[in-house]
Structure formats: structure tokens, C-alpha cells
Length: 272
Image (cartoon, rainbow, N blue to C red; front, side):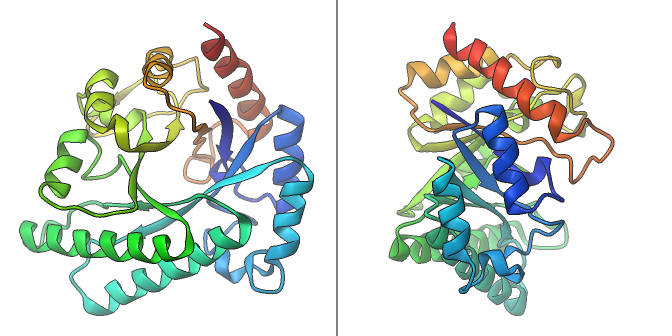
């Protein structure tokens, strides 16, 4: 298994700064969520038609794989215009993934709106996921549904995808969210293991279905070593990606603290 981090942990960095800290800390890859303070990557020259080849060459020259483009795409809205906007964002981010040589894009199931019919919402999400997966497949990029929001647990994801076959759809396992909703790592891995393509690692000292805090990895109460063991035993060969949510929680430690610590802690887990 290899180590990466999401740029959510260094949201104001430019591409050169991302590369610099990745090399300094000994990471194998990078997951792109925010650069230069924005998640709208398509608005930045570095990821546009004229700049993306230069950006890819920079990552390649420094021996870093761009693993995943972590979008905010979700298909929960029944509004046709919103659905079209999410489809367009999917295409834009697939283009960026192709340009950077990334294997995956991340999408969400999203929180279920209370004012919408549940079955109609499920139908819309499935339609959106099928669309995203088809667009990705046509370009050689796999779409990953994250364990998050109303689809944090394997039970919730299986309910969404029950009797639905969507080719080119994998799972991004965020280890915190199923666990804080009462599902053990073993339960999540048993149900979703064959479809897990990417993993988000974070730690927390106080968590429940209603929320969570963030601690440096290894300083919280999540049994992260257990998740690593499950992945190793299951033959997982992908990335363990630090999702340090600095963009959403500016009070937590800076990347200069969290990123090198993560590498040291995870190397210890992987060596056991």
C-alpha cells in the first residue's frame, strides 16, 4: 500500500507547494481536492486545456502520482437544472483526471433532502451515478462513491445499489464515517471490500452519528491499525490517503505538522 494526502489539508497551496511538501514528507501520491483556495479546479489555468500538460509533467518529474480528483459532485437534487450542472461538473473533472493521469474521481451520494420523496431521490442518485460511471469509463477513469453523508455505512450503500448494476463504480472507504455510525471496520470491509479502490484515513477522539472532532492520526480513538490489517489481509494495493480537513476546520494543525506525522504513523502500522 502507498501513502497520499488530499489537498484539503493544504487548501491554499499552489501546485508547486503541494509537490514540495509531498516530496519532503515522502508521499507516493496526491489526491486533489482544493488548490489555491478553490475546489473549482476547472477555473484554474493549471488544470485547463493550456496548462494541464505542464501540471502533469511537474508531478511526473517529482515521482508523484495524482491518484484521485476528489469532486463535490452529488446527484441528490430532483431539480433538472441542478442535475445538469452536476453532470457538467462530472465531465469537467473527468477531463482533469485524464489530463493528470488520475485513475479515479470521487463523488458523493449526498445527504438525503428531507423535503423530497426517498424513492425518487434514490432513483435520481442512481441515475447520476450511472451517468458519471459511463462518462468515466469512456475516458478510462473510475468513479468512486465515498462512505459519507446519508451513505456512510455499507448497509446504506447496499440499500442504494440493491439490484442495481453500475459498471465502473467503486467505493472510497472513509474509515471514520461508517465507524461513527456504529459499523465496525470488519463489517464495512466484509460488505464493501471487493469494491474498495481508495481509502481516506482520519482520526477522531469524540465522534457520534451527530458529528466528530479531528485529531492528528494516531492521537484519536479510532483503531486505525485494525483497518490497515483488514486491507492488508484482503490484498488491497491502493492508497491510504490522509484527509486532513483543514479547509473546513481551520483551527486544526497546519499541513506542516499533520502531513509528516501521518507518514511516520502509517509506516509503523504497515510494518506490523
